[in-house]
Image (cartoon, rainbow, N blue to C red; front, side, top):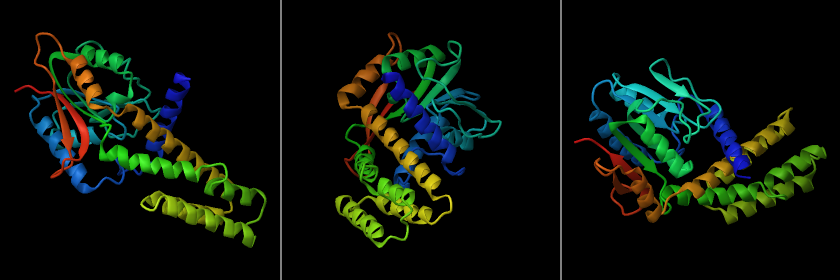
Length: 299
């Protein structure tokens, strides 16, 4: 079951990066600018302090958001990104992207990198094995900066409510399956069928009043049902929602409590080396948790 779950999640992320707009490289869709700008400032400070021609590895790189930011500030860095997804975007000759890579089995020799980064990725992997691989490929005086999901973060809260809406939309007698039934029974013009869809949509809005995905999906359904290839289009929408649900479920499972974050920091420690630093990152100007930051940075 564990292998099947890992495979499903891999396919979910592959589909995500395959269908994401080319200009989009982040893993926090819809995050307000204050959040992305705040995190970018932390990354830029880290990149600025790296030695010339540092070999940097980004774990779980996804669309390459961290690497693109690094390259925009430091064109001298040698940048490589790995991800579990089956395919990754081409970011040009300056950035090497390696898909189908498990963080517990990195395809690099010992001490291949001077710096390692991870933005909401390391915590998804089996942590002991992933930490051992990070240590293996990092030089003795290497640096790292890792953002990990926080179990009480605004990110998790937002995605948990979104997942509840997705699950209702995908329910056996929910909006998607009801629309599919109408198409298969060729009742597109049937007033009763259309009223049923309207009632289902109203119920969704009542249950999830703050979730924009309800409006997004209902609009998609309305457009796709009038398409000549409506059945195929709706099945594709259904699959996309299922995979988004898988990604959010994986996020919930990987988010770290304080104890888990402290345990991960301890695992990263090496005798005789400066201890890594653990910090709870909050939304600017608030006490609302955003992420855990684990870092080892040379002075």
